Image (cartoon, rainbow over all chains, first blue to last red; front, side):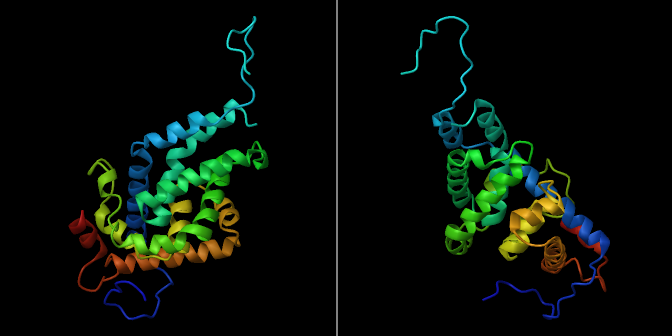
Length: 69
Length: 176
């Protein structure tokens, strides 16, 4: 059930593709990934993390008002 | 209970984790579910993280395990409808690439997940062969051979191998 095979025969030419082609792919891969990394983060993750409770609150110097129940 | 600094570090890694998830699953909506699940798991198992080691690699491992145990089948179903997944995420033209990124992304979705993840881990997210091998639970040699198969396949899918009547340079330029 392979998807869209190109015109080439099956014989996998695993040996060594043209270095320029490999370089172009490397560049495209980085550009693709950089795009993804820079995409705006959905709010749901920020909200999710906001709900995670943490242990070591920095102790307030004096009697803190918001005592944790 | 995890510390506040662990939470900050986690927050700092989400974008990378999400980029990996999108690359791996080929779908933004699946990726977001995956990231959510991975974050919850990371938080509840935070004591298993060894300080001083790579948090990114640890998170990738968690997300990958979730993907292969629960999402892989769904990903196959979703990919077709969601095929050109990254288009709406991206601002065209601000990245240096001579290949058309849309073509590149389509070609990526045609690779087996094992090849796609290795490409992403090594070629894009800046992890070492050792880390990639640990994340995927295989030998470094396996990582290297998957990487080389993935590259060859992409060269083929993108038509960069037809050197006879169209030199690679020309094809790259034409695409860009």
